[in-house]
Image 1 (tube, rainbow, N blue to C red):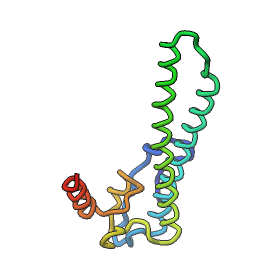
Image 2: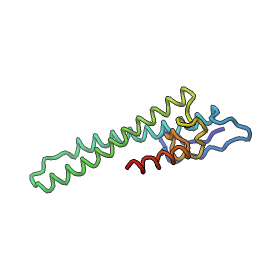
Image 3: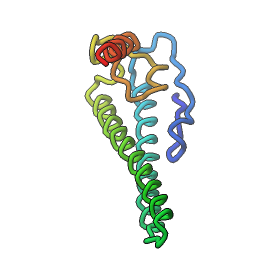
Length: 144
């Protein structure tokens, strides 16, 4: 039986998956474990989006003091940049959920080997094994 995060809990507070002896990689139980993690993570990000919208609506004010207005605009700008990063992350989560449905989740998109349970728990949206990711980062660093 899997012990993973409860609905509504933080996506980062889950019980690590305990593999059973002889269990096939990306078994139904493992896929369900990762689907739960991904769905909880997405739900948390969506709650953050809602909080931002309400915060910006509730706190938007036309301050007469230019310094106060600039501070508010700076805070809103930072919040919007953070939400933009989270929007891209939600897209990656959706792609990972599609991979679970199609049966490709957990395998490196470059070389096809297993990404690994622990790596996926650390980064559930990972699409590369550690070796291919390392090579990718080296190439990126060399290209500038």
